[in-house]
Image (cartoon, rainbow, N blue to C red; front, side):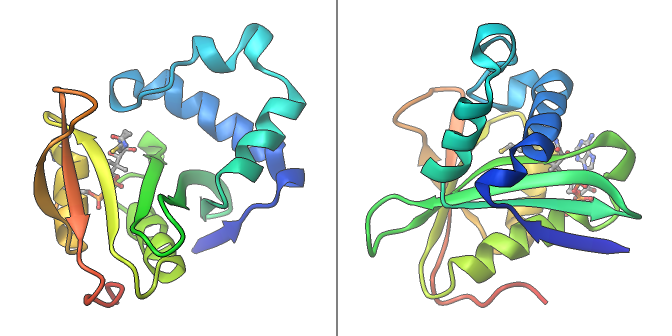
Length: 159
Ligand SMILES: CC(C)(COP(=O)(O)OP(=O)(O)OC[C@H]1O[C@@H](n2cnc3c(N)ncnc32)[C@H](O)[C@@H]1OP(=O)(O)O)[C@@H](O)C(=O)NCCC(=O)NCCS
């Protein structure tokens, strides 16, 4: 029922569709805004660049419906992996889509710690990340409304 697809830049249309849905559905959860990614900011070269500059991008299908997304990149060559752009469509929440997305990042990051930033009041996301072994790592230096969470490199992906 749940399928994970790793995207290439040619897959920018499906990424665009889900990302615009995510920014519409949950604007408070993200640093980017819908305004930045619609209108003049909504161009094929920009979406392709996004899928090139960030090296790991996944969508998750639930019952064949594109329903979830996540990305990851390396902060430094051998440094921690940063998990970003996590979203599950409301119709697919509570069905394992978020687990599949997080596990895809953990497999890609294997052997490296994984970090992320999450809004302090985003309880669903915090619970999800805690379930996958992330621990609170203090306030974000970039945004007082966010916490950092970190997952040790010694943990294996959650089965
Ligand atoms: C965060 C998100 C990806 C979680 O997806 P999901 O499919 O609901 O994930 P899960 O079913 O694994 O639920 C995660 C936890 O949140 C809990 N939860 C679900 N809805 C909740 C709510 N409204 N308030 C508080 N907790 C909630 C679940 O019980 C679960 O807790 P558990 O691990 O103790 O069982 C999804 O809610 C989402 O896309 N939110 C908007 C975007 C976002 O916040 N992205 C993360 C940016 S850091």
